[in-house]
Length: 145
View 1 (cartoon, rainbow, N blue to C red):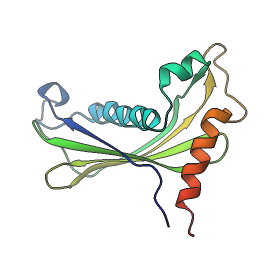
View 2: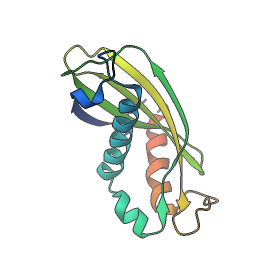
View 3: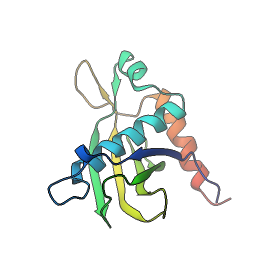
């Protein structure tokens, strides 16, 4: 099985990312997941501002996060992002956030995204071709040879 495009983003944990218990606040992980998906799209040639100018926005419609361990202040993180599923209407990203030093996994997430018209707010019946081609190619990379 070949690999699709995997984006690696690094992020340091700052005090503002933590909660009263001294660990990363759960919402901080969601922000980093979003950063990873945005960077994945840019890495594959799709700037989200350019897509928005073409009346395409990509909201999250399903999010499944498994918290495994807590990151702490000053930890250096790696956010890994790849596409694992595409059905013509939605795309699913697999994302992990782990320690840069120990590679210990803090969270794993599956994030499902659809395309809607920014102007009307309505769901496209199919993912626009400009994105469909990229997502289809990514999923084909995951199939056994």
